[in-house]
Length: 228
Image 1: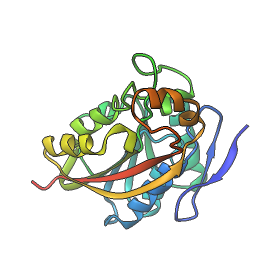
Image 2 (image 1 turned 135 degrees about the vertical axis):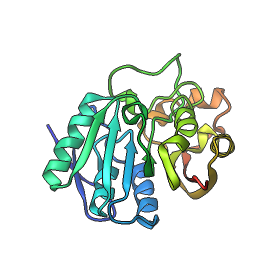
Image 3 (image 1 turned 90 degrees about the horizontal axis):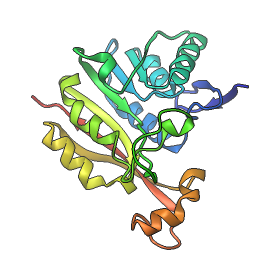
């Protein structure tokens, strides 16, 4: 059964079936950053890890030419359905992060990737946890985006990335800068732990990622520009 959600700052709606990431505070925060980003009509935008496509649709409503990528076929299909329902043109590809757009460049890359620290080795290969679990330090996907974004941007293009402060803000800034991008923190917001982090509170505390009694995580928006 599909559920109707209103999840962007332009009144857009997305249908999200079970096992597809439902837009939450991180999506909304990134949508707000997208709304402030200069974006000419016809700009090429890439949404990496699109989920149900809320960010892709928000960019398309601004007149951008949008490509959306997700490694989960269910998410890719959901984005196609949502684009059709909204009567917006979005190219949707199913594949691993930046691999489906090899050889292409964009004016703006958006990404709300998996970033939740998780017990156990590797990344989940199926199920809803694909949308949030990202290895013991939460950086298994974030680091790959930081390393690969520059070569997918036109000169003057930018990356807008969101992840939890639990993953390490300084590490992301350093990694983006090493990749040749001029990176900065654009926005921060504290939100209560959701069900996943709440269920891992003791494990996160044992790892030293949170303090005893901590109940909120910091969401961080990064802006990284290619200046050459």
